[in-house]
Image (cartoon, rainbow over all chains, first blue to last red; front, side):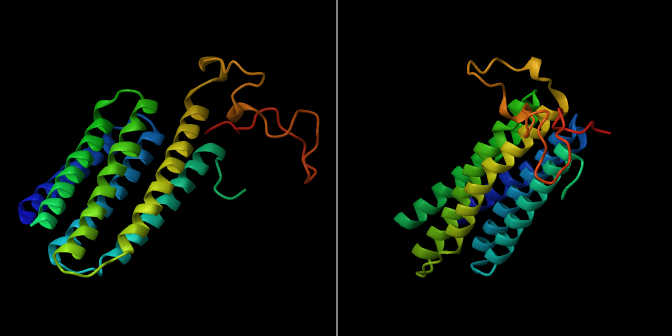
Length: 89
Length: 137
């Protein structure tokens, strides 16, 4: 039962990544593209965690934490760039 | 058995919410509306997946892992901040203060206020600008 649910969830997050990629290509403005990349990072964290359940190991969480941190910092830096035209004034 | 049902339910919830979040990202037509989907639905989906992982290692493998809780806390703190920054960036790029609804308070929208009142001098000596945002290239 867990196997089926796991495959369903992984498929859902795979389709989500594809939809984010479509918005990244299509997005009318720069904030939309940044939002698409941020959502891709979050979906990728979920995919890494689900892969950890699939393999039965707990060593994937370091990767998930690192992805969360770099994704957050890069999104904030990009927003700062869009707001001010500069990352560090 | 109950643990398996719990893990499977959490996994299905996570998949459905993640898909709803990303589909809403495509379907909603306004950039400010578009901020709703990933910051709410996708965050719930990821949190549910992390809870499922924690429950799996607890019930099926018999060891308690706390690392998921760290990721959940970090994501739940960082996603509203991300949405706030993106909304501010969108407002400053695409909107004017006259487009926004009135605040019905004494002061105007705070993000469009200059951070130093005009005429005063900043602490570093540079003159205060009346426009807080430089023109975008």
